[in-house]
Length: 416
Image (cartoon, rainbow, N blue to C red; front, side, top):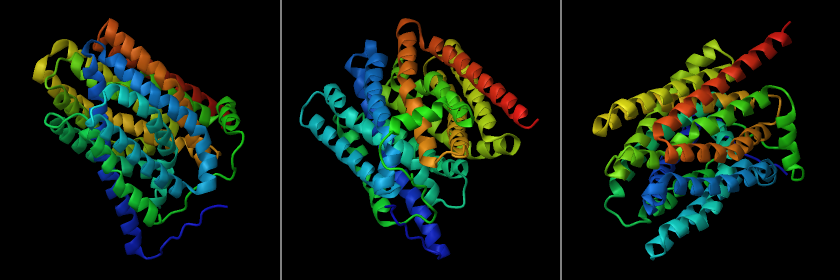
């Protein structure tokens, strides 16, 4: 039985529900940035010579758990309702992070504690990956998926930048574990809003209930069409681009930036500030191109930024290098989040149930992400950060061009 959502027709309450959701998301995102920075710092500083590999192990654990969870989310959403399930998932996230933090503060070794708790974090991440775009669009009714996601992205970008800068300073003065505790505590506002405030738009709910989750997603991937093209582009981003964001702390360590948390926080803040640019970039690209082609164009921009990162790293050093990376990171963040917004918009317009479409893209992207992490970590360890960036640039550019051309040719055949 589907969950009934009560929607107000009072314009003032419409504004309030969306504003409350965005405000709660902002607070939670600040905590996410602080927690992610501390978790990555713990992995990197456990063995600085192998920081990239240790960070990769933690992230792969999270990705595997998330991958195993995602196929079941549409059926769970049909049973519990997307909003209620998202609230339960966020509440579980807060508890898991808080327990990990308290264990570390009590004296348990930080890195092994992360390894034990990260699979649970991955399960809640899988829930959030599918449900967050659906719930966000409902709270921001009147927007397309790309429009709603871009609006949320602006808030998330500014909040992540604030959290990264706060975390970069906070972690210099507090014992290990406190940043992770902040992450758990700041989930509370979002849980309260999800539990008490009804969205003003319609929530898309899967019509099926259990059984065949893996088979259904696999069928979507095997079937030629726009969803498979979206999946292909998303996989390219996961392999060649997203490791930069996941490995930002070991990358900062390789650039010999000290103190590590402050340098990594600054680079994270640059990328997060760039998220704000995704809103006008998405609007500009959508005026000129269909969503899938626009996503491919934004992916090519990501490749260009990665090439600039590599050139800058080869030519500059110390604080000047960090400042230039920050500036390039702003552009990179705008392009990267434009890709994600446009991918989601293309996915939910593929004549497939919204939850299934998002779950399909998320499942495949998360499944192939460890390939990219291992590729980047291996290149960074054996060769250099610059080499990893150039490989990423070439890989994502070639993939985006191939997807763009293939879909353009398919579309032209369909209209003749």
